[in-house]
Amino acid sequence: MRSIWKGDLSFGLVNVPVKVYSATESHDRTSHQVDSKDGTRIRYRKVREGTDQEVEFADIANAYESDSGETVILTKSDLAELPVQRSPEISITGFVPEEQVDPIYFDKPYYLEPASKSTKAYVLLRQALADTERLAIATFTLRNRTRLAALRVVDNVMTLQTLLWPDEVRKPEFASLDDEPELRPQELSMAASLIDSMATDFDPDEYEDTYQKELAKLIEAKAQGSEAFPAADESDDGADDDSEVADLLAALRASVKSRGESGSSSDGGSSSGATKSAAKKSPAKKTSSTAAKKTAAKKTASGAVKKTTAKKTTTAKKTPAKKAPAKKAG
Image (tube, rainbow, N blue to C red; front, side, top):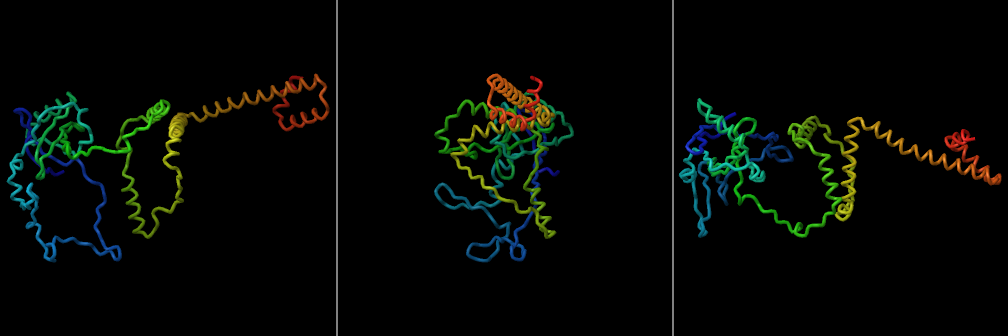
C-alpha cells in the first residue's frame, strides 16, 4: 500500500504523526471505449472550442462565476495559495456518541498508520476511542478540498471516515408519502414475524458481486465464441399495484410460512411434518369407519331393502379399509 497523505492527528495538545492510506479499492474490470463496428479505440482530446487546436493539460485552468456574474479564471498555483492547503493536520474538534452520526453521511474510508517510531500516542487514542464507544469528529484538507471526517476503530486500526457536508445530503421529499396508508395490526405483526424469521448476523464474506461474476463469464464466453447465458422464458408477473396491496397480508403470511418450513426442514423437520400430516388424516379414516358401522347397524335393525343393502355392499368392496372394522364388530 502507498500512503496518499502524511501529517499530524491532533487533539488538545497531543499530536499523533500518521500516514493516510485509502481503505478501499475497486474490483471492477477496466475497459476502454471502442468503435463497435471494428473495435478501433476512441480517443478524447482537449481542444479549444470552435477549433481543432489541442490544449496541453498543464495549460488548463478552472473558470468560476463570481457573485456579480463575472468569469474568474483560477490556475493550479492560485488554488495552492489557499490557507487550508498549507495545513498538514487532521484536527479533532470533538467526540460524539457513535449512534449520533447517521451512516448516510459516510463517504470514503481511510486507514491511519503511525508515522513515528513510538506508537504509544496512536495506541492510546485508538484504545480510548474503542473503550468510550465514541467517534472523533475532525476536519482536514485532502486533494484541494476541506473534509469533514469521523475517526473510528476498524479491525484494531484507526480509520478516518470522510463525511458528507450537511448540504450534500438531499432531503427526501416524496409526495407519494404525504398520505400514508393505514396499517392493520395483523399486517404489522406478520411483518415483524417475517423479520424475526430472517434475523441473522452480518457476514460480508457471504455476499459477492454478482454483476462482476456474470461479466467475467460473458467476457470468457465471447472470447471463446460461445453463449454465456442461454435464453430463458420471460414470465409476466401480470400484477398491478392494487392487487399487490390486496395480497400484501397473504404474501407476508406465505413468506413467514415458507421461512418456517425451510427452518424445520433443515433441522430434520420433514419427518416430523409427515407424522403430523398422517396424524391429521388418521382421524378422518376413523370417522368414516365409525359412520359405516352406525349405518350398518341402523339398516340391520330396520330390515333395510335389498337394493340398499346391495349398494352398501358395493361401497364396502370399494373401500376395504372400512369393511375390515365392520367384520371385527360382528
